[in-house]
Image (cartoon, rainbow, N blue to C red; front, side, top):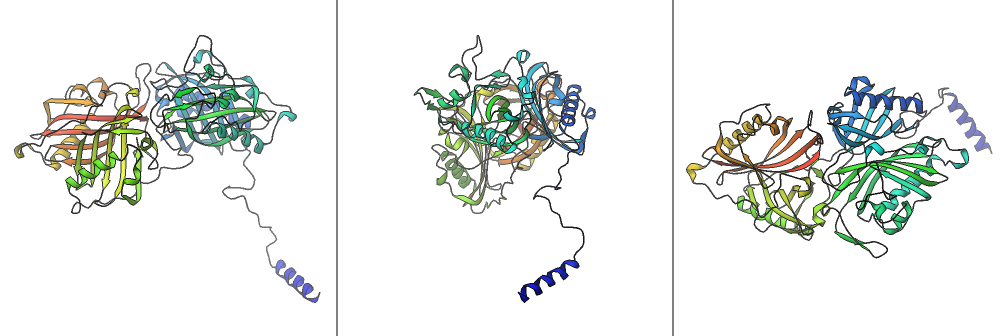
Length: 593
């Protein structure tokens, strides 16, 4: 007892020496233990409407954006005022509006017009200190790819999203998150097992069209043609192609029973047909890996999902969301030409590309750290086209450059038997493969395109006809500089006999496009990188990115970027052939580095 009294006295004495103010701490990762509630629902909806009005006016100054606002369109960071902001020609007067006073987020679902054509649109804003500091938009345009696209003149947002629920029909924030997340659990590798609680009258609006109830006069291309209602479709296993659903939630409104999430459905398409739970065989609409990015709202009543509204569009497979996770760096790479000459690089490049057929990635001698990208998105080796390529060209064009430590392979690949152009850049130091960058162009993206039938063959030139690597670099840079000059003329080092091909299709001579409509609509050719040079055959290969903002474009045009692998053939110091292979990307997308 004496010990306890002594200890208590000592503790009391030491406590007297402490400051009178109590020590406080906030939760990890939070700026304050008391959340900022200076902008609640009405305030958030007001700022959301300010954003929409500014978009309609094409004028960011009409909304209170923070000086450091981060803006993305289809998961690509660009400057506020770019992309759709330059091409928008109309905005719906009424959209689905939701907000969360706890997280400071608000979202809008509806449609816009872009260069006169309808597009489905959704946006998330985040507000801090009375300013919009984040804008995340998803824009779905009509294209040759299969996806729902409703008649925007008939699109109706269910009014129940705005109705306040009686207390007995509400659920806590945490329970609502669990219910909404169970929807994505059900969609992921959908095999008939249903984790989510659905109301009997559950309905889903995707890109402005109901996909749970048949549309009169419409057949095919809609899940409602096979099964009606949310639960019935999932019990049938219609969405088995969803290998992975990456997602999170940023809005929960307990009073109205609304939860809103964002994410990606990764369609690995590692197989091109599958069975429904009723035994019916289905075939995948696309034969290659792809992802859709989405914003999706759920109305939850009596602990059941009652209504769903989503806006989604295609992005390159495994695209990241920069608000969640930035791009990773490609590991550094140092070529060793003394240990591996051009013939060595050529042979290795062919072997590496051959290993894609049948997903034999383990046959490659990898470096300790490896970078791998498809259409400028970093992914894991063994995923993506590794899992779907059934054959590769036996007679490709290969440009090997030991000084750069790179080999470029151009030719035909087949994905579940469907042909496409492939351009592979393989980095090799004589022992290990350090990186692979893959560009794939499929016919579904439209002209110009000709089905590949082997790479072009270029014979060695006589010594007198050859051009030095330095001179080829200078000439191609002047070519790109002219492309970047509005109304620019073709440089003098372009032969009058030069022909230009894009994705295997001849598009004409190399001189007349300069000053013409196509190059006039080009904003810039950027991030140019020389991949490989072959002086003996007069070849130099670049990787570039071409931005087309579609400002003042024809109806149906929209902002986009091409990743391009471009081959120049020189003879006698002049460009006599240009062959480009491109893949469409969201506007402003940067290279994976």
